[in-house]
Length: 381
Image (cartoon, rainbow, N blue to C red):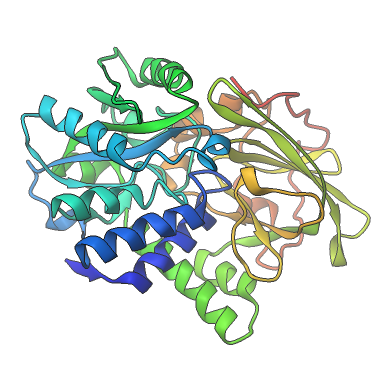
């Protein structure tokens, strides 16, 4: 077990935004959540999966919906507690720890808010190793673990508990409820045992985000290249440098859907990149050709500070770096690619790992059979 103080929590929030691939919530709000929890309740406990008993009950509290209304509507008060307590009642009060459902600026930090209030630990891991826009897109689904019972709550005191036949139906119903609750609300789901966590989750991801956040902070303090520091920690690659010249964004069916258009700068001058997103960045298209896709991570970062920019905050004129980061190995299995790969989002291409497309220098490598691949005109399902 480790005890986390304010600086560690700030680093986790900053690093989570990098792995959040544009989604998972605003990292600034995530930082506020974590720091407030620390100030109110004191240092927070982080445990590894190995420290859990096999029969220990773990649940995943999170925010569900579009990140755009999250700017004005912040579901981390009584509604988050209500969602957790509603689920725990269904589990007869057996919850012993919480864990992030995904890595993102807010959803990485929500469990700390709950854990601090209740005096229980947060497990060092999550179920994506990144952020994804749909409830069923978790490694638990690959292992046949269900989301139900699934509790959802809003600021008015409403709560709903879902029991669904599979996780795809959980996503469908939860998304509809989230829309009715104002396009963003609190949720808690996926009750699992310690044994299931050890087998099916992405382990160590909170510590990973802390290392990334620390690298950003230390590079900025030393006036060094924060992007280079992130690349070193993540084994990532810089796939484009440019300026945002257009952003198209709409909120539909509980998601933020759209794309950002970048004009190349420096070595990428004369090229254009389009990054399409559904809450999270899904594909990066350079001069008409997809050069990076889910399940690998695509993150847009401020070129100077190295801070990740979430999709709801992309703006014209920002000078940015598009960074690619390899996904967790579970997503590179046939089951992982089928669940969270490009075809799930209606892009008719085969997934190609970043390492086959780019070297550490960020230079393109030839990938046979991919020229002229046609991206889908829409990312939403």
